[in-house]
Length: 411
Ligand code: FAD
Image (tube, rainbow, N blue to C red; front, side, top):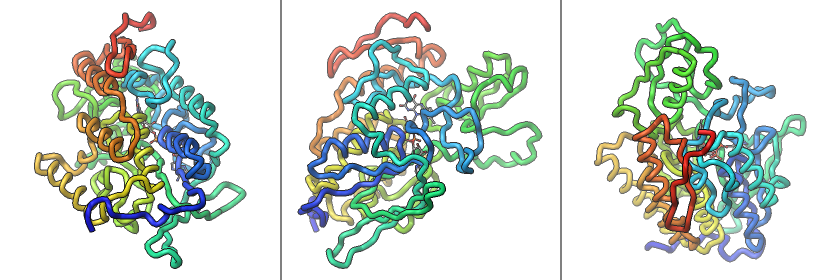
């Protein structure tokens, strides 16, 4: 088989396609928004959300440990978190933040933004809250050779379990909720308190204490600054040049049972995922947002539209073998450059070419160039002024230009 010859069996569909979305965080909401805008081809999605609320990461939860129903607390948000990307870069490209707000926002504003996104696209009626997806399983149909449908089994409190069938599934379960504990010899002998940043909420309990923070990623830096401000004695331990940014916070938590999908999960890498998104063997399942060091919302915006082009048949994928080969080549290239397995999903400056490729293959508008140029500028500022970069304010002037405004009065 040559490139662009895999025909998905539902390409000549006569009925609207049913799509399940797992998770009502930013990625799941983005998937729902685009599915709802294509009612000619897609039935309204079913969005499963295990908690009572939309927003995922951006729902601050004072408690640590578990919710009342025993599920682990999902969000790693801390009380004083402000975004590390300006709202002009962070936004979904088709849905700006309130222009009155400063560029770097407290987490509550991001949640408000996602609520507004939902309201504006009428997504909420399609979310099933307090409904946990327990299993996603491919089913071959005997009537149509090669056709796979998906059985999604969910459970919802007293109402119990339910299994439904879909043509496609978006896995948008988030990748920052499963704390990664590095293996450090002798750690078990440490007599003090051990805490993962997933369970850090505010600095007060550490006043006057001496604290070693392992890792100078965005959370490590933020937390060091907070602790130092309440007179904790802080040692920031890391292997990077002084105060380097940004690093991933946690490990990826893949959907359960992926080996059945022909995927391997090891060292925080899910492999092989064509275009970091779909298993070549099952190209109607999309694992959204597994990459690291990205602009998450614009990233979801591109991945979701690419996935819908695959599902509606307007994008003919290469053969299964060709997709696997491409992923393998790319991983070998990076490994050859000395990138460790656990960093293979890091994108950073590679993300721009990736978004352009998705847009050109998927037939949708690429991100405006200003997203890249402002992201690069903020990255420079963050490296130079890690303590002060959030005081700056920006404004988008056009698709290609931004300007820096005077300091925000609250800064
Ligand atoms: P999540 O927001 O985690 O949402 C996943 C949803 O899926 C949750 O609601 C969860 O309850 C639900 N779910 C999971 N499993 C199931 C299941 N089995 N059944 C049903 N529902 C399920 N990004 C930025 O752009 N700017 C920032 O400044 C920034 N700061 C961050 C700070 C912290 C501390 C963290 C952890 C992340 C930060 N991020 C930031 C990245 C952030 O994770 C992304 O912006 C984005 O919100 C991730 O969205 P998501 O939908 O992929 O995942």
